[in-house]
Length: 188
Image 1: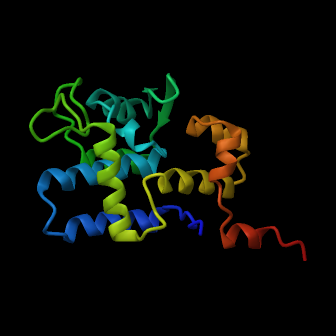
Image 2: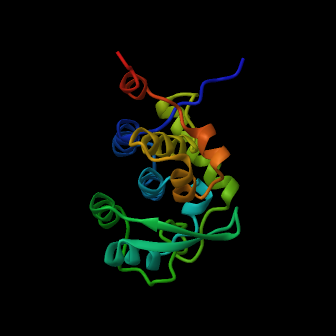
């Protein structure tokens, strides 16, 4: 049986963030890792492996200019990331901007210039998400949520694909119509 893949929207993000705060079994370094990863994902739709390449310089540019360019290693091209005022506030809340520009925004507790391997990062995030939201959620649920939200605002698939740095075909696969989206198309 194929499982339904559910999206992560603001409510699910808030539930994850609350879970991080109240779970005493999570050490401080892991709490920071989850808070920072989920914040980048909910506001940008980044892949988990992309979050590991963000530096403090990127965060400073997001705050000062409202945008930055990152290198998407999966697609081997640059991707432009934008920051709303709400995202800027969360950056200032969850990230240490006093670190050197070259430091990773999400780094190992032992070194600001070292980050978890992509496979470790993805496994850690997926385990936490499934534990706190359920088996039908994964790290990609943030991407699906972002694309579905953009589609619900009547953005076409080309705009969504460009914003998320995927093909139009992939963007269309991620968009899951919500009950509210379906209600809006009623003609009579």
